[in-house]
Amino acid sequence: MRIFQVERDGEAIQREEFVAKKVDHDLARTNYQVDRAHRALPGSEQDAASTQTAIVH
Image 1 (cartoon, rainbow, N blue to C red):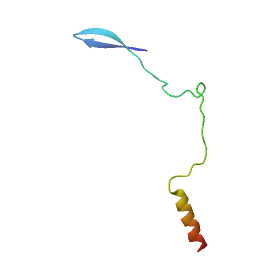
Image 2: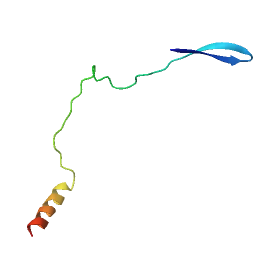
Image 3: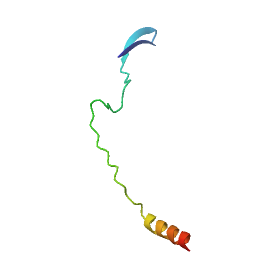
């Protein structure tokens, strides 16, 4: 919490402002599962096959 003063109509008024300093994932408290399975992109099998054919010929 941050407290500051502003002046309104010649009078100093105290205001409070919430300041979020750490808004992110907490790696110490959050469990993650990572899937590193190899997945072929659409069309990549065709590209690989044509590349192998080009090398053979």
